[in-house]
Amino acid sequence: MAGSSKKAIYGAILANIAIAISKFIAAFFTSSSSMLSEGIHSLVDTGNGALLLFGINKSNTPADEHHPYGYGNEVYFWSFVVAVLIFALGGGIALFEGIEAILYPPKEVEREHIMWNYVVLGLAMLFEGSALRVALKQFNSTRGDKSFIQELVDIKDTSTAAIVIEDSAALIGLAMAFICVALGDITDIVYFDGIGSILIGLLLISVSLFFATECKDLLIGEGLIESDLKKITAILDNEENVIAYKRPLSLYFGPNEVLVNLDANFKDELTADDIEKTIDNIESKIKQVLPFVNRIFIEAETIKTKKRTKSEPNNQIN
Image (cartoon, rainbow, N blue to C red; front, side):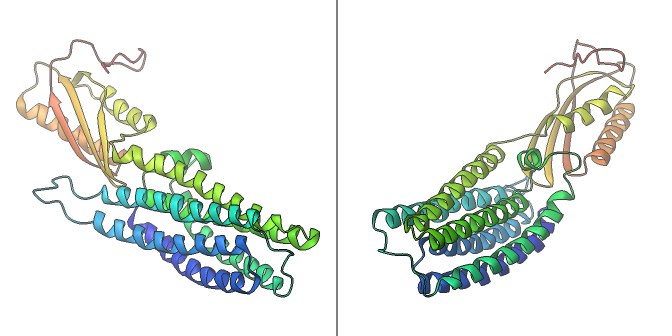
């Protein structure tokens, strides 16, 4: 999944480079704080895209003796760095520029080159919308029936989530900048420019905190969501040679790298070969329903509580 995110990231980088240049040109001619904040936002997004690509490439490094489970968590680390950069460089600078523009506003709204703002913001919305469309196509390919917000919470491919979040925030920020520039132009109130910059800063800080929290959960050891765990327990419930089992333990090592540990009690009359075949069958079925689970460890253990059947409540030990 992470590898397929590259197309969306490349599209976002190219769009952000063009948009950042045009925004800075407009900010130079109009002295607009909102436009300068938007330019910084696009510049930060460009750098973030490069960091996400770096993280994806590092996460594909083969496992070695020092990292026997591979380097999949690299993509989570660099996604967390991106979240911090959105907060510090994007939101922080935009907030600072907005406050400064309100404390030390110009005497009047700059009108001579204000058309630059409208043209650049309009083009930026077009470019950002195109980049977001590519990212959403990848994002929606795994969303199923979940809501947009729920998928953002559940998704483990943080590189795709980062691009969707950044591009969505960019479009909202552009709309804020456009409205504030227009209000300043219409009313001649110079404070609208600073207000727009502050709103953009608060937006970016909110987005970065949400994304950082999601990355943190994966970095410190997040497991499979409940719906995926139920798929595993359903396989165990339907395996006639399994008498009882404990709640499966799982851990993400990357978007497509998941470890699952199972403790199961097998029928006493089974031979070693029978147990081996049963374990192979369980592993095969789990990988069939959850292809991203690539490491499964099943331990035979004496468990007194009996296995749940279709007509009984869930009695497996947690």
